[in-house]
Amino acid sequence: MSDTKQRLLEGALAALREHGVTGVSARTIAAAAGVNQALVFYHYGSVDELLGTACEQATRQRVAAYADRFAAVTSLRELLSVGRELHESELAAGNVSVLAQMLAAAQTGERLAAPTAAALRMWSDEIESVLHRLLAGSPVAEVADLPGLARAVAAAFVGLELYEGVDHEGGRQAMAALDQLAVLVEVVDELGPLARRALRSRIRSHLKEGAT
Amino acid sequence: MSDTKQRLLEGALAALREHGVTGVSARTIAAAAGVNQALVFYHYGSVDELLGTACEQATRQRVAAYADRFAAVTSLRELLSVGRELHESELAAGNVSVLAQMLAAAQTGERLAAPTAAALRMWSDEIESVLHRLLAGSPVAEVADLPGLARAVAAAFVGLELYEGVDHEGGRQAMAALDQLAVLVEVVDELGPLARRALRSRIRSHLKEGAT
DNA sequence: GTCTATAGTAGGATAGAC
DNA sequence: GTCTATCCTACTATAGAC
Image (cartoon, rainbow over all chains, first blue to last red; front, side, top):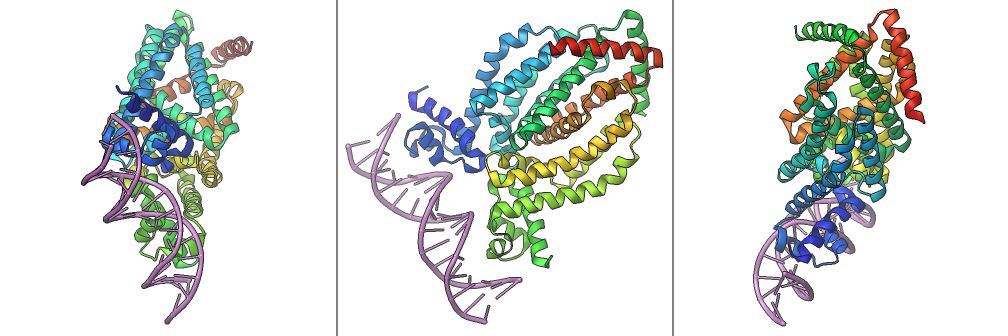
């Protein structure tokens, strides 16, 4: 990967951070990267192509940077704590919602849909593997679809990031409430074997009820 | 409100649906509304002002249209079911993510932040009142910050809508997983008074643990 | 209130010199 | 690979006729 090509990727993220998806262009990207505007098209063919590649690469790096922490998680509470830490560091780095911006643009920009979905998938896969590890043998694991739950968590975080961008205090409050939800799940998860069995059958009958 | 002014509001939503936040402009809006482009500026001063007003008005209408259903909800499960129904009908109407698009744009467009935050607040207020009603006297209500939880739920839905836009199957799966979470909360909420008390003290000690 | 016309700006993309 | 120059398109916003 040539130096310029790499600078353009970083410029794309910087432009996305600073100007948002509505203000990003070959010109703003090139300015952020400190290179000529025509090089966007020489190296990537189009702005969308560059944005997609940048999003995918950046996400891969962020996920890799947090892999150790995810691996060290031993409770749902810690998982959420890592999530909040991640959220805070993204906020500090200024790219609170690069992924969210891309998701919004991808709704109508077909070219962006695939790389954006792939990026979100990277996060949810990471979350899913932690969930598998944490919930092995618990009653929760039996009733919950872990891949689906992981996707929901990843998507929810994106929503929270967007929310925090327009209402900081509200976002903080929402995040704190999630913490309480995690406590609830954890408490259920730590019940004794007897209570567990009772809960399990209750859950099952509830699910059947819902299926009809 | 003159006819044209109203048509512009509808045109703004239509343009947002069809072209997304990156493709919306005074011209695309005017075309969708069937009026002259200059009228955007005559009636609203700027595109952003129009978008903000449109988002707020549309959300107010949607919330009002669903008020009866929210009021009829008697369990968390039903609440989620109303949420999914809402999600489906938004999808069918094509405005899957008008609010999400606005949120993304509002991250860097200061003019849009206030109306978008207000729109999201309308949804979370609705959710909050249902939660208050459903969880009155339950152990969950004692430990949970209901306003925060309602905001988290609203934000999570926005994230799920965005996710579904780029990965339909994944979004469906995530939504189904949420259903299972609701079952869990419900089961906990329906425990007998003895089990309830035990759970309550457990939750409290957990929260204290986390606070240190 | 609504239209046409237009000024001024910014963006995508390419051609061609170096 | 990188630059300049440029074409064409689309945009915001306003002025002025009706």
